[in-house]
Length: 358
Image (cartoon, rainbow, N blue to C red; front, side, top):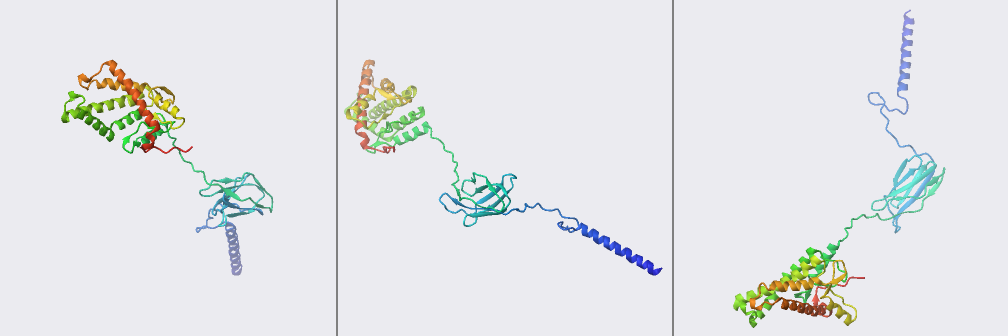
């Protein structure tokens, strides 16, 4: 009995060992990793292994045939949209292997180059070795924002250049434009140019010379002599210039939309140029680019003449008829100035802008 019980115990123990071994074998089947506590670890997603024997190869250069290493080349399966990406090597070459039969497109991208995509779908068959044409990448398009220059900006550039024009490098010659198709001035720019002329140091200097000559000759005797008389003459002379400039070159041109500048012609026969220069005292270019009666010039001279009657000595003031006559004479005298501008002063004016290229 004792031996039989011992054998039965041994048989049961052996059976338990066999069953336990079987269970352990089932729980640790191949392909399942075990975590330290015995539980199976979660499997990580793996990219599908390439299946097939086809090959696609090629090389990447720029449009000058210089190799481009490090370009990212992507192979895309048209049907499944699955992609594979590699980089071109130091020689610009790339090679996809173990490709399954199917339809594919290739994309290429590189830093500082425009992206590239093959135009035609590649149809691969089993075992095919497809050699792509050389991929030539163009330079990446540079997107820049270009701020178009406005008419006002252009006019500002032009009057800035004009304010550097000086006869013999000294006397202001700001009211001559050598660009035949100059941009029209805004109201602000017309007053800006008039103020610049009126406050130029040479304007004050030449006014002082005029007042000095009048004092020396005893003109406008009611003003008296000495420094007080000189200062009164200086004020009257400067008042004439200021009112004439502000009215004829700023106020009326702004109200009437006319350009107060002399547009230099510089070509054609002498007679044609002379007639043009003289005519600009009675015609001018409007802000719309068309020629029209120069009302601004005439009205400016006339207005300045009437204003001057408020500060000249009483016995030196003129009647309305004389004022009008003097205004017309002043307009005629202006024609002499435009003739000088057309034929002489450009050649002795410093700061004239260079002729623009055609």
